[in-house]
Structure formats: structure tokens, C-alpha cells
Image (cartoon, rainbow, N blue to C red; front, side, top):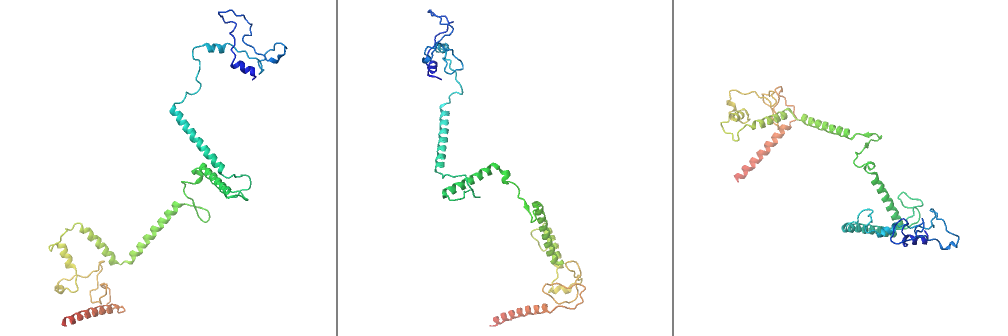
Length: 320
């Protein structure tokens, strides 16, 4: 745009159109109303026909601008969003200030950081090969770590394996079913525990098992027993009568003797026998021959001798 076009557009006021009625008589200047400014260097070559496509052509300023200035009504139109409130403007200014501060801090950090040249051979750690300073190596390692972390966060939990079940394999590479292996181990442990309990039960004799059953029955019967038991308790008296004692002086006066039976219900040997430490009587099929090594006899002899010496020592002390 030339200087003449700029002045004509912004500062010059055009004349009124020919068709408009005015109070004063004015000479009609022809169809080309308005002010025409031509270049000064025409040098008398005559009037130049304006080309609408030419940039330096004279501009015809119509009467629209003058009419716009004479109107009293406000014809200005608001384009875009309305002006923000003071609170919104203050919040926007604060956000812009914080962003500017962060940008300046990032710029200062980038300026202070050592310059890293990405061209060249890199090692597996992310640092370049060759002679360089410690700050450059540290910056390269940090950049490699940041890149790996960014890639890890972008991949998400699908590629990281988080929350997935661990897959176990054997020596040949086949997948091991952990649930099935756990069930097999649990079943094996239960079988071993049952086998150990069976072995322990097999080590017990018939008497121990019968005593255990008898204690269970006694506990069941104890639920219905009274707290205090007196001498008129028939069940207690019968139990005491059935109990045999080897030193009972009135046992010989019994007219009806009960046949001895073991705890298991089998008959016992009715003749004389050598006593033992456990008080076990021989079975009813014993032929009376002692096939032991004499340990029981020596045991009772030593115990009686120790008891006799203790009583004799006590008697000597009393005589003194």
C-alpha cells in the first residue's frame, strides 16, 4: 500500500454523493464522486484509468464513513466473549505468572545442565563412548532413566505384568499348574499325617485303647452325675465292690468269686504267677513257665532291699 492510499484511507474526508439533496447548491462533478489523489509524478501524461487489481491505484472514498460519523446511535458491535470479571482476571494473571515462573526455572535448569551431544556411539547404559566430563555422563544417564520411565508409564500395567499371576515352569520349560501342585501337596501332607496317626495307634495295645474308650464313657456319664456323692450312692458302691485288691483281708471270706477278665473282655490266668512292674497278668492260655531273663525278680528284690534299709536306718535313729 502506498503512502497516498494510507493517507486517503485514514485521514481524508470524502464529499457527499451526487444523488443526495443538500441545502446549498453544489455543482455535480459527474459520476466519479469523491476525492481522487493521483501520483505527483504523472508529468502531464493525462488521466490514468484506475485498475481495480492494481495495488497503487487511487481509492474512491464514499460517503459511508461520513454518514457513520454523523449518526448518534452507537453502531459498535462486540465481537468475541465479554470482558472477564476482576476475580477471573486475577486468577488468569496468577496462572500466567506461575507458568512463566516454571518456564523460566526450566530454562535456567536447561542452561545450567551440561550440553549433551546425541550424535555418536552410545553404550548400553545410555552414556556416550569417549572422553567426557562427569556432568555429561550424569546428564546422559538421567536422560536414559527418564526415557525408560516415560516408556514404562505409557505401556501401562498390561506390559509391566502388574497384577498378573506368576507363571512357574519346570526344568523342561513346561508350565506348572500351581493350584494343582498345591492340591497335590496338601493331599500328600494329609496322607502322611493319617499314616503317622495310624502308626501311633498301632503302637498302642488293646488295654490302652480300652482305657481311652472307658474314659470317654466316664466323661459322658459325668454330665448327669451330681456334684456331691455320698455313701448311699449305689453306682459308686458297686464300682468299689468290683475292684480287687491284693492285700484285702476279707477277700477270702467271699463265697462267690468272680472270674477274672481283662480290660478287653478276655479271661485271665487264675493260677499263681511272678509279678511284674506293670501289673499285667498272664492270659488264660499261659502254661505257667516263666521264660523271662530274671530282670523282674531282681527289680523287686532291689526295691525291697532299699525299702528295708530305709526302715532299718529309721529304727536305729529311734533307738539312739
